[in-house]
Length: 71
Image (cartoon, rainbow, N blue to C red; front, side, top):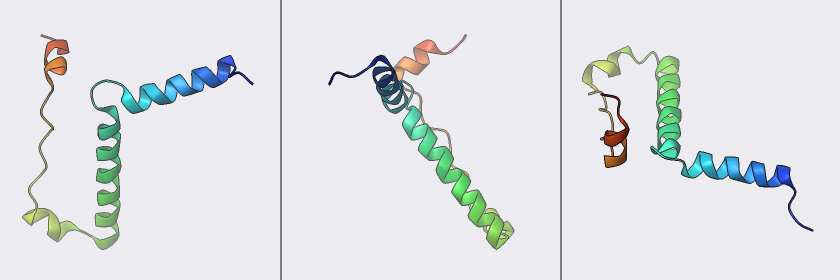
């Protein structure tokens, strides 16, 4: 049994999502972690914790991203 065109397309989309450029997978996981943290803070009324917390900075850009950045 050979894979059909739809199976190949689905596999290609999954591969592009997982291994696409600009660290998309790590970006998605970072966004998910921020959402979970915000949800937990919302449940506990985390106003007091925000005063002592330092905000996380952005990840450094790769050389490829620096070259692609608009000028």
